Length: 272
Ligand SMILES: NC(=O)c1ccc[n+]([C@@H]2O[C@H](COP(=O)([O-])OP(=O)(O)OC[C@H]3O[C@@H](n4cnc5c(N)ncnc54)[C@H](O)[C@@H]3O)[C@@H](O)[C@H]2O)c1
Image 1 (tube, rainbow, N blue to C red):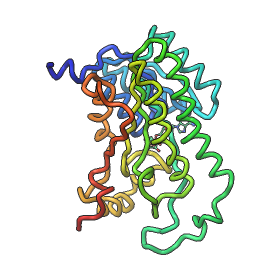
Image 2 (cartoon, helix red, strand yellow; image 1 turned 90 degrees about the vertical axis):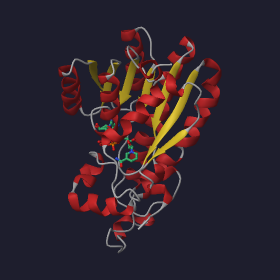
Image 3 (cartoon, protein in one colour; image 1 turned 45 degrees about the vertical axis):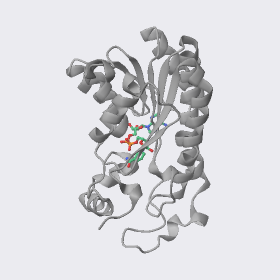
Image 4 (cartoon, rainbow, N blue to C red; image 1 turned 90 degrees about the horizontal axis):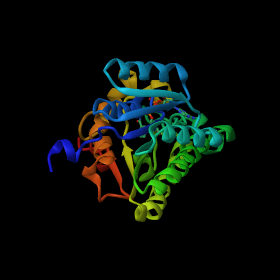
């Protein structure tokens, strides 16, 4: 098969939650630049409009919708509207997520009392579970309704390497909110496999995005995390694009229930 067919996403009806920024925008961009039809759904209407305009200016068939994934009825409505708009639903990136703040260790290896387990506010834990855990599950549920019926589709969850190991520089609320995503993805994958619907996850290591107030965009913070990586650099949003296209295209037609790590080797440990 020619590479254009193998990795082709032309015309695919695609929805990206949290698609206005960072990893979600990079997925939307990769799909749009390769002629998929893309709906960007994001809680931030300003950045959503900017993202849509940016891709439209490059000729993309892109639309935007304001969506907070913690509103279950709204998620279902947006997924239903997207499927109705395109007449089908081929690819859903369940991506929207937020940070729970830094971990219990500061980067100078001192302990941060505010980030100790017993001092983490209930509201923060609840918010992280609402967005990162329930928001992804509701998105998968809403997508499944359409994809099962049409007997095709791809659901791609943005997970994290924090599902594999405990974190010292990443807050506990984030880690626990993401921990269940691998099993959520696998459970959806086994149930939907017989309907030709594939469900997989991308598990990024640290990427420079706007998450956590853009913490990793600060050169000092980035350089600290760059040095922890065997590749001597953390991820940039465009690093996700090959994996996004792979999981959305025929190239991954026999892959389901997989969580693919994309971290420049960070989970291998430090090399020097
Ligand atoms: N950046 C990293 O280091 C990293 C690493 C692993 C996993 N991730 C995951 O990648 C995903 C994308 O994060 P990012 O790093 O690109 O961050 P980002 O902040 O750059 O982008 C996240 C987008 O999601 C939107 N969003 C936030 N809450 C929302 C909600 N309730 N409903 C709808 N949209 C919402 C934001 O407005 C934003 O546009 C998240 O699930 C995150 O946990 C990020």
